[in-house]
Length: 367
Image (cartoon, rainbow, N blue to C red; front, side, top):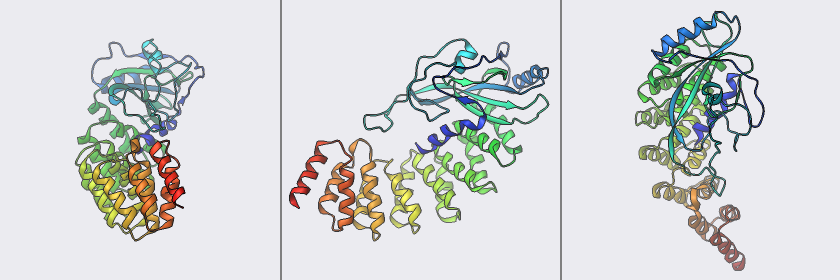
């Protein structure tokens, strides 16, 4: 998923070094006694404890997030973790089972069971006197993290509402820049549409840089809530920034709602902006239903723009589980435009499937 991939990449903003297979300097972890009370009370406890350090420190707590059983959060590096100390090991003294990103046989992410995982939310302060964090980040507890000599004050678990209240308060005070970007990323991790969607809409409609407004549009899709639909649909007509409109496409692709596919189909067929149409067509490849596949086939045969036809052919090739193979074979054999047929033939060459091989043999023999 596009939105998640972007969230996974930003973790470097926090200044932690997430790594695989390297050693880690021992970090001092001070756990809240009992880890009870409100998050605000525990946060103040940490700040009082840190007052004597006179140096950089980190305050952390955890939320629970539903995600893929074998998925990692906080980095886009694939593969099993080897060596190093994880957050779970540093905080709780236990080492998690090795996790590996689930990959299908074709190289595309395999569908996996969704489970609840504990996610660390980490606030880094440059000094005890600092009222606002210098950076904010998040990671699975199974991530290996190098904290160095920076002490970590661990507050234990928190409810999404408490976590968001603190994050949104910091976001509203933060100027444009990496801290504001990091805060928005972490806010978007929470599955609390009542609180998250109004903030994302406010960012989209506000004066933040285009890049942040585009990310806010993309993150709307992660909430998977019907209230995101009119916000994203409006951006196709009212928004002047092409970057923000691209974010809207990604948000609609992420929304697992039939109405989101309908909006994408409408723009794919009738949109006037070719660059965005191309984005939408590729997005339709991630929504493999009879309706979206039928739209791609229609575009491949009937659109007035040859480049759009070729884009639709590529989207058919990108459909999961070889769903588009039969359509691709038909285009390769029957399309009136040689350029589009060649596009389909080249796409067939990427399939490791007997039907694709047979089709290519038949096409060659016919010539």
